[in-house]
Image (cartoon, rainbow, N blue to C red; front, side, top):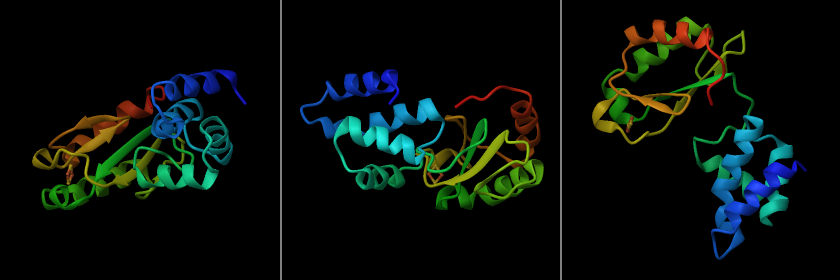
Length: 159
Ligand code: FES
């Protein structure tokens, strides 16, 4: 086990009366270290927080912010829920797919960008909402896609 991750999780656990309450923070720390939640990452979290691996996976799978599969250097997430869908989210998705050469839910061939669908990002009145490396962009349009992808292709990983 990596000591730094273990220590960081223990610091989170210390903030709560019940160590299991730190599960979200522990998952976030593990993902920050490994860039996704691999089986090994889940085992580390499980040992640190004293919850079965299956329960850690169940918690992580509920939230869009946890990556259960490897991702590219950058992660683009398009809200496809109803409010964003009504104002053009499908056009944004199609433009990303075209520009990246990959379909929603996959990673570009160069490994640079993962394109994911997400449920509501909480900006329903300002859609379509796109999260790029966890930074939200409102009123995103298909015309915004090309320069964004060009920027991501030339920059280091950001999540
Ligand atoms: S439906 Fe897209 S942010 Fe809420």
